[in-house]
Image 1 (tube, rainbow, N blue to C red):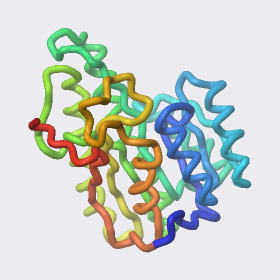
Image 2: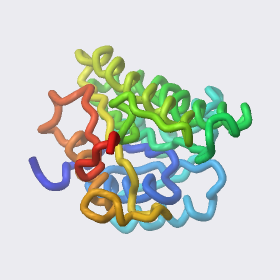
Image 3: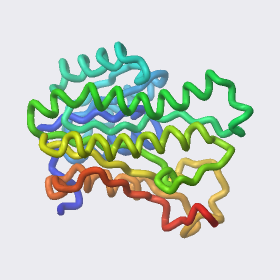
Image 4: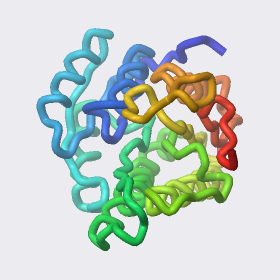
Length: 245
């Protein structure tokens, strides 16, 4: 496998890609030759700046606004990408709000926001991308999970996020089976904490959080042609952490 897959002629949409991890993943995909759509909900100026930086790689880039929990807005988002760049070949479901409070202190509206943005957003965007991928006979969907969500481990703090990310991983496995004859792969990349964290990292594995490059490495592997038989998998990017410790 090459270090950077050749995505020339492909179109990629990364949800929540104006800032933070989503931005870094989108720029690395652009560096592989894909035209890219920067999705945002509130960060208009940041999305524009990210698209401009993506164009430095010699690819086309656009920005799209929308609420990934609203089916109509998801349709509008994809319509805009298809109009400007063509059908989405690569979808990275990165959006996922969290609420770092004890579960009993989280208002119901906040519960819904976490679960709907993280889980329902992944489902809605994937469902909208699939017809075009099936028609072309090629597609890559990569969902961003959370490192502990495949272990049944959860903490009273931020619990709705753990539940939603567990759903994302279950959806990943289901959708991989449902697309196995369509030329599409569906996988997940699950960091524990990434370099923009504000947490004390002294107790983290290797004494640091994951870098953006650490998270991008399995993503780019999943996008490579050599990974066409790898589907339904989840890579925890956590430095070897044991959640039980």
